[in-house]
Image 1 (cartoon, helix red, strand yellow):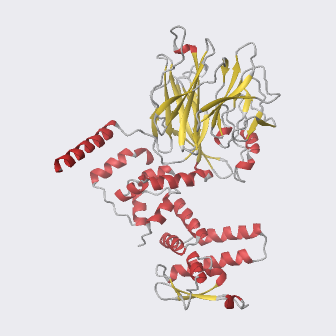
Image 2: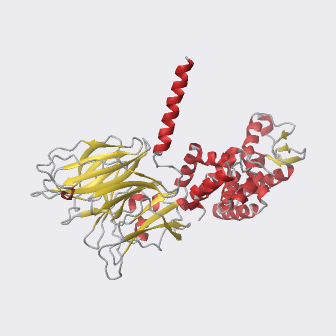
Image 3: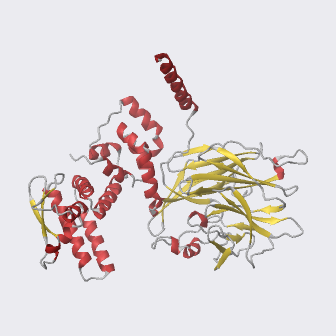
Length: 163
Length: 382
């Protein structure tokens, strides 16, 4: 490890997605993925890191997110401008299909990226808070295992929550 | 279709308002169990306590039979006020009170985190009900009755007593407690009892001997202690604080700072304590308010006088002014120019799914029956 840190050129890591696509990322981006940072520190990041739970579509988005955050944070701009910039980026970044949002959320959890996890959870929560039960079941793939009578009973019990 | 891991789902759910979660219990059996799990309830509470958006305010409005008759209210309306970022009022909605068909009198004793403590008084029967209520999920508990155990010289009715209730939460034991101060107006004797939500029972607190009290204020709860402002009987007529530490259950007397001695009864301001650990006192008869802050936990004798906030015409304090004082302890973007609320009938709480309802008799009986059958089976198997 000591010999590699002396090199001035940027270190690059290879991430392999579930469907076999290999992404090249710089160290500043890679360390934002807590899982990968641990691998790098343990020197287990060669020749590439396989991520079995993330598809290439989602991994591309995750890398885009981390890249933007790494660039904004390391750039010379003042903290408030960087903050504003990140906020607008995050808002636009969250403007995706809800299935992708769910996968991003799971990926952020798996890759252990705290800020992205926080962001996706918050977005999902505000997205579903006013939804009907049928919509929520569909979105989260929840099977309704109540019998007709049972469902009627629970709906009656919590009728006030349905307004 | 995507299926997200359960811990991720829990994290998303813990950020939802209580009403959405109650609704989503009907999605499936597993969701119902997930939302009822103590893990989610605790996670949700933790998130709620740090989220401005889950802070709500309860306002109790009285209404009268005729407009011109403003003496005796005939009913009460409960409103929930929700706030936006920047502490602007976002929404006002009516809410069903925990105890209905009671038009006699209802007042707010206090609130702590997710619970509100209410006092219903029934004028005709001279009885009262103390209710703990979680408005987010409409769950409540009526406290068990406890008698006044002051030794009276002669048989006296409850009308001879002054009751002063307080409500607080002890962080260390994680217990919500109701404190009841009863003053015998006849001879200045008093009694303090504390109800613990965890134990579901009352306990009598040992008195400080040789104190004879003339008047007592509503208490303020701060730093784990309940503080009543009391005025001694003549000839001294001095004011002091009776401080009850909820953790140690020890009562002690603390003297007030110089310049605090007011000629009339001074009352605690009721609304500041919802947000901070500050004790704020005001003179309830004049329109001037004195804000005092007591520093330190156990040393309540260090005092700082804050600047005077102005009052509106009804004697209610203008909130914005108070919030300026609270800047340090509130998130940066929290300020309020828009709120004007007059005394007593408001309190704040945060959203939570925690139940306070006792398990119903049926369920308790069923549980004990199951226990009996189990032991029977066990015995017969031997």
